[in-house]
Length: 421
Ligand SMILES: C[S@@+](CC[C@H](N)C(=O)[O-])C[C@H]1O[C@@H](n2cnc3c(N)ncnc32)[C@H](O)[C@@H]1O
Image (tube, rainbow, N blue to C red; front, side):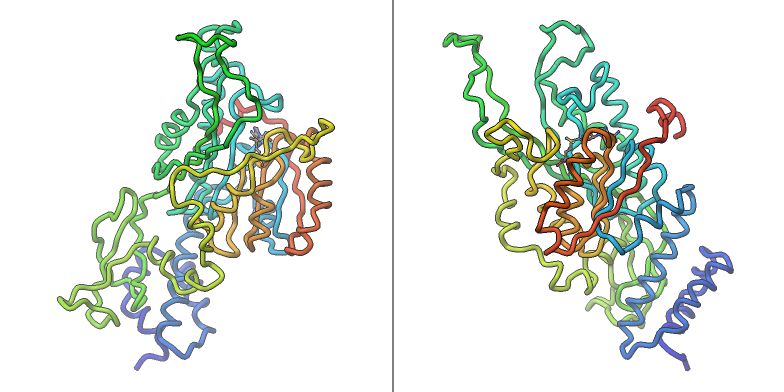
């Protein structure tokens, strides 16, 4: 009766497909299916889910006006490490919605380094909030943001600018609030134990008496945030592929679950309940994502089993006092390595909006992903970073090639950028 299993899916799902797609979109989906022939029904199901989900995403992405040329640059598979110069707020605004599968970064820690400085803590947090808001749009739905930040000792300059204004500034706590306000869910906080500080100085001015004792700062946070944008679009049952599904509960805030109502579905429970699933389980449990290349190695699982993890910071200054990296605050590869292996699949796109010396994109490319980094300070870092990437023999062995895109000449102030939202 049916030409192939797609016809069966379409006939059961036709009413809903007509409701959510206009004629052109529906025909576009049908054309994608037309040429495909498989030997098993399950292959038809998987292909339909893939194409349908992509079409829903394309529709959503059209709601934001993105830069098409830049989008092509990011999607081009020719090179797997993309260096983007410019202000990340400006660059993020040019990007397609939900086009990045994982974000990993360490932002500037307020005024801790010479390369980025703000008038006071509030202005810094305002800027970070605008950027995090935009990352929410660009990160794919039900995906992860890994954010490394330290609680610094500095002057917030909100009360006094005098030298006596220094205090512990809990940047970690402030960032959790910003992320939650922008819609993310705070999931985990790994404490990175940085070991013995290089300096043996005790913060007690040499006085072994009460009220003079302060600890040295030896930890940073590695936060895990999830994005769950509530999407009430129906998604196909992972067993029969049809859209004969009804809303179930939300399995966590922002994550809609569905229950298959097709009585002829390949999978029914003993009590004749249909398969229950969500867009997230369709992704995490898909056969291709459970292939061997995506297995997280045992060492990583073991190393990150506890939420306090000890590894060394990067030693960037050699015995002659020269900086070997070309950047004063690189993070160790341990952070992107864990993030990429635990929260992305091979061939996906990983973005670091505060790329510094491009540690994240480099590790991403080495691990078979596409690594994208955005860095503001082109003039300060470009030569050293490109030289270092070119000299890294490992890149060649691991088939990493990079290309650049430059927005650093675009003169847009943060004030202008924020106004555009
Ligand atoms: C802590 S460093 C990141 C270091 C990096 N993880 C590495 O391994 O080299 C933060 C970086 O953010 C950059 N930055 C600050 N504001 C920025 C902005 N608006 N857009 C892009 N990069 C920015 C700084 O120049 C600095 O290189």
